[in-house]
Amino acid sequence: MRRTLLAAALSLLVALPLQAQQPTRIGDAAMTQAVTLRERALADDTGWKVVESLTTEVGPRLAGSEADARAVEWAKAKFKALGYDKVWTEPVTFPKWERRSESARIVGAHAQALHVTALGGSPGGKVEAEVVRFESLEALEKAAPGSLAGKIAFIDYPMTRAKDGRGYGPGSRVRSGGPSAAIRAGALAYVMRSAGTDSHRNPHTGITRFDDGLKPIPSAALSLPDADQLARLVALGQVKIALDLDCGWNGEYTSQNVIGEITGRSKPDDVVVIGGHLDSWDLGTGAIDDGAGVAIGMAAGHLIGTLPKGQRPARTIRVVAFANEEQGLYGGRAYAQKHAADLRKHQLGAESDFGAGRIYAFAAKTPDYAKEAVARIAQALAPLGIEHREDGEGCGPDLSPFNAIGMACAGLSQDGTDYFDLHHTPDDTLDKIDPKALAQNVAAYTVFAFLAADAQGDFGSAPKPATP
Ligand code: ZN
Ligand code: ZN
Image 1: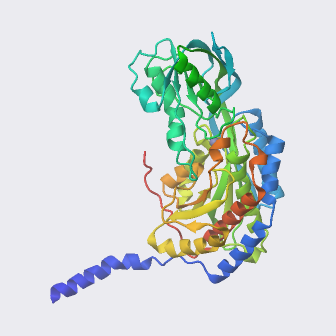
Image 2: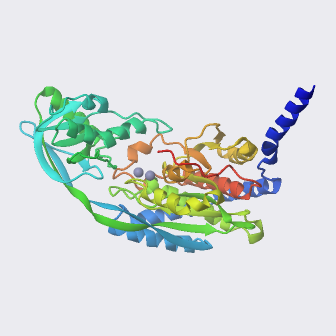
Image 3: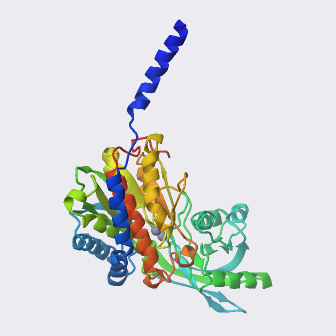
């Protein structure tokens, strides 16, 4: 009997701290307000106007280029024009990579031009050599050291199409890992079938990297039809190509994360953070990657900001246009570093960086005490055709460094079925965005940000040691 009492007392002691954590709640008034905002957002074209303005007036904005600085000025001015209460910038420094010219051609009996683009981070150089084709990164990694001496390595791996973009993992590894594997086998240069799913004669660029201790070699991507053509020629016999890249690293550059805030009603120091990345690759105008994400965040904050001050959410809506995502999450990492001490003040975060297709799923990884509030957000999103999923895919690239050290995050998954037809190509232009789908995205982010910012209680942001 005494043992039972003791055990009961002990279990009570153990249970007490858990019971002290009140469930996070979202009230009925907030739900009503969210419905009003959602319907207003669906009928509003602010998101479209913002992405039209960015892609038209700034155009392509390669990190570190002249257009990078214009994009920063554009973002500051746009936040102000959209009525944001606070607008500021935070510096982000990174090495600057430049693309000057690029060409490739088949030489000899079947002479003809190939459509290529240099991979970001590639050095320049002129190489004329025989091509050796590999079906996958794994196949090239198995090539014996020195076996490609005097040759050009070619990986012809076809990326698969998927709504959730899962083909991009293996596809982009061919881009990030191929050049180092080629160097280890002794190759003079590297070419790859683009990490893309289209059938156009557009190569897809994107960042690559070289493992420490290796001397970088010129590295480029072929359009998919050009990769097919090269594969057919290789099947006929020995093929030589001449690759001529003029590009490379050139000093350092300091850009800015541009931040706008709609001040909260009663807890203005606490924030819900949304946004996208301001930089783009240089071949298109960066409409789907990631003008759309910047526009969705800016428009969502703007719509919440149009509410009378007394009806604003309790916490602040912070929209971040991140610098240089493309070349290594520089803006996202700078943000995490600068705001680490304020991590607990970050209620919840989500970044849009997967185009402008409709959002079809919502998920947030939170402690149990916040699950009821997450379900309420999901309930307000459901009429937009968004299903609630238990398991999320994270919260976008630029918030992943902050999520890694403890910020609670949510994911709003976009339909990316055609994303990799356009991604990092000259075809990434405004006409590819469906204004209605973009408005659905704005509506979803508006609802999400408003409800998360007005919740009573938190979603579990707490510092944790970074995982390497
Ligand atoms: Zn992106
Ligand atoms: Zn990108």
